[in-house]
Amino acid sequence: MPSGDPAARNRRSYSAARKRALLRRYAASGLSVTKFCQECGINVATFCNWRRPERAEGQRAPERLGFARVRVTTPIALTSGPVVIELPNALRLAVPLGTDPEWVSKLVGTLTGS
Image (cartoon, rainbow, N blue to C red; front, top):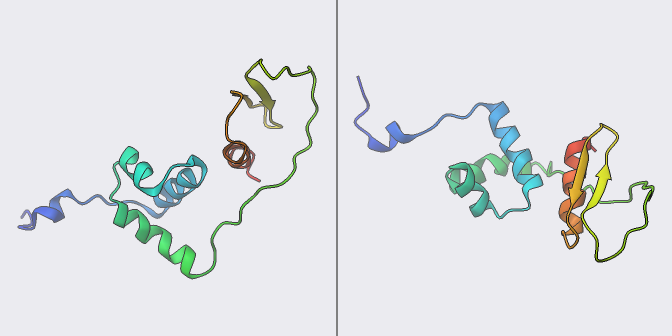
C-alpha cells in the first residue's frame, strides 16, 4: 500500500558507498555545497547531514597540499597552453593556463590517491 505522505514517495535512498563516493567527488570538485547538490540532484540539507558525523568526530580530510616532484621536458612560454601533467598512473592532464593551482592540486591528489 503506498504511503499517504507525498514527501516519502519522493525520497531517495543512498547506500553508504554512494554517500562516500559523492563526498569524495564534492571534495575534489571545488564547487560550493549548493552548486554541487544542484548538479547532482541532492537535497542540500541531506548532503550536509552526510558530512556532519565526519566533522563532529574531527575526521575531516586533511588538506593535501604540498610539493610534487616535477620534470619540465619542454620550456613553457607564458603565452602557450595547456600545461600537460603526466601522473604516475599513466593519466595525462591538460591544464589550461590560469587554472587555480589549489584546484589542480586537489584534482591530482584525488587521481593519485595521495
